[in-house]
Length: 353
Ligand code: NAI
Ligand code: MG
Image (cartoon, rainbow, N blue to C red):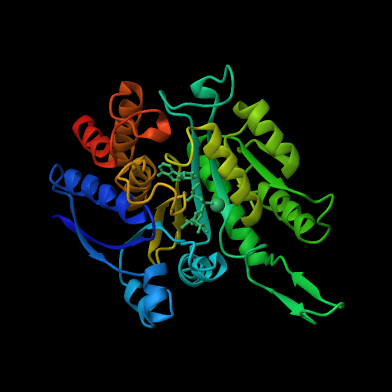
């Protein structure tokens, strides 16, 4: 019997709608070729334009409506006309937080044909999976702004690290490393962050006792950044905090073909709430409306969504089609030195699927 998946689309701002259209095109292409599943889409107009018209980033009952969907596909949020801390926090970060999408899963894999600025790097040497804590840490929004506009002005931004929060993300990473038969590296900074990261390291070591079969490493975040460039082959699965993960995965995107390619999944592994899949790039106002945004990142996000739904065969096939289009070099967008449009690139991927 065919299962119908209800997908909420939040195209958002800038190139968001341009790339989400392409993600949907790929999903419509594959649903015709497999009778195990079909998709029903509903699009929501939330984002910065919505904010400028209504004074809010989403409808008041938005979270209530989204709750019943199987997954959310998000384009990008951000406009020069709305401060980023308002737009990001009230839509993207709100969904991640309120739906307890505590795992941010980002593949950092150099596909054949993708450009890398690392001289002499071979494809098989750059193949890591980042597991970024996605619900607390430095992005918990905890702090204070005291005595504003006075000489005594003080701002405090707290890092929030709960035992529950650290244990569940680190456990997720151990399980993933075991399943994929890869090593697990924890990235922290216990030498300088003497509460949060000492606690993190302690939990990493504690849980490690339950996974004697998983090879583990611990790195300070500065050394990890250096090794991602100098010796990326040493990484398999990597687990880290919200802030460190945010920064290191952009570095990861840069060494595997750039922002036009990189995707990320925000997972609620228990499936109590919908998970959200997105290209990791922003709204790219500099190229919005030109029809040249690279659709690969959002199509890779679709591949992650199919993995999460349990159709890993399709996740793999979509990734291989992306790799084939990169190898062919005939249908790439300008960020990858091609001259194809967003739509032409997707059509080539569908042809290769
Ligand atoms: P950005 O990712 O939008 O753009 C950075 C550079 O990468 C630009 O030169 C852009 O043209 C290029 N680029 C990004 N995606 C591309 C694609 N698919 N194809 C070809 N080139 C692509 O980051 P930026 O400029 O720092 O931020 C712009 C806005 O997006 C800001 O408002 C920011 O807050 C927001 N933002 C939103 C995110 C999200 O919704 N997840 C993530 C990052 C930024
Ligand atoms: Mg980021």
